[in-house]
Length: 167
Image (cartoon, rainbow, N blue to C red; front, side):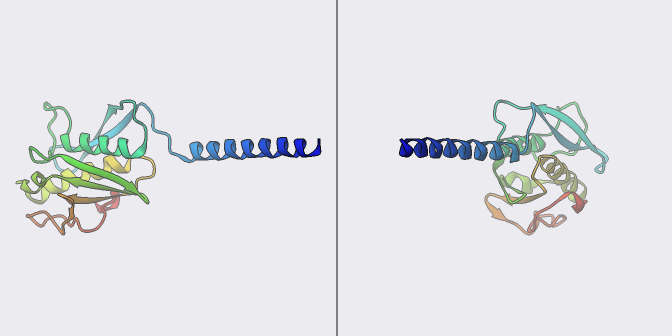
């Protein structure tokens, strides 16, 4: 009889421990709603403008970060005057680890033709968009999977993570 009670108590303690662990894990993950804010840089090259973008069913941070980066690179609707990434630039991959979003862009990003004005506007929008997500403090940019010191114009240093204070 005593062994049976001990076994029941142990099972109840194990269930309580598992339930507590699940609760703590869920409550420690940042909450992402039905929409996210993506930024673009206005045509003046300085002013950031937000726009809300609806999310699909995925709410995990890596999926949302990929979606946000893709939206930032695509830019706002065509009728909106904004600094834009070069045509054909795509987001190849986004990983989030230790507060940094590691964004891998296609080679097309290197064909920007607007000098420091354009480069600054492009990456400012990307960084502000990603750092608007809970838990993301910085953005490391890669081109075709490699860290690059700068783009061919040499206007913006990309070998270290960028954050909002980079502007």
